[in-house]
Image 1 (cartoon, rainbow, N blue to C red):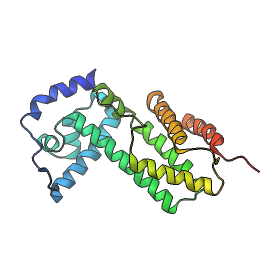
Image 2: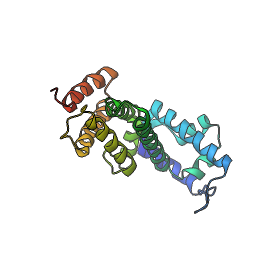
Image 3: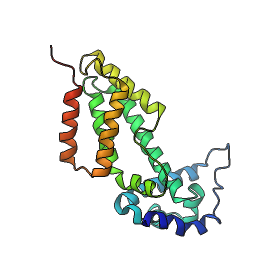
Image 4: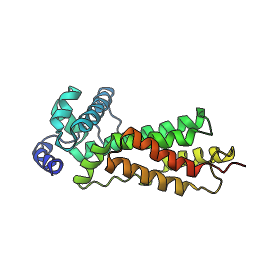
Length: 209
């Protein structure tokens, strides 16, 4: 596969560029933090556009940094891709917590559900490339902070009678997993996502008295 062979071609460079700008136990310098953020932003855009054919050199060019800077932060392409997914997960957790604090309890869970499926569809190429390289990324991977946020959204929705009281967080995760896999593997367009989620949400709603 092209993603896998791309990783192999880049390995010789990695031996000469150890990750030296963040010694163990020490935080990154401010300039290094800025470079890392730029690299991640550039990588998301490059991999979303080109998928497995994208190279680390293209990421460096888009981020306007030297290739050695990319390798100091991310010694392999897999490291870079894993960091992208970690960043995306953190953003999703932040979004869920924002909905907990400020969202309408009747709709916040459904809003987050929709955001998560849309994010899964948007990162299809990244997840595909990770899978080709032997790095397992699963939508149902245990992520404690995200699980707690979804549990809180569910509890708030059930408290006001917007979601069926017998639905448990494990079932919400099962539905999320199914929807995310569908969006990832089936390349669902916006219309298909909307119609599929409408069916799921209808089954989650509490029965009318």
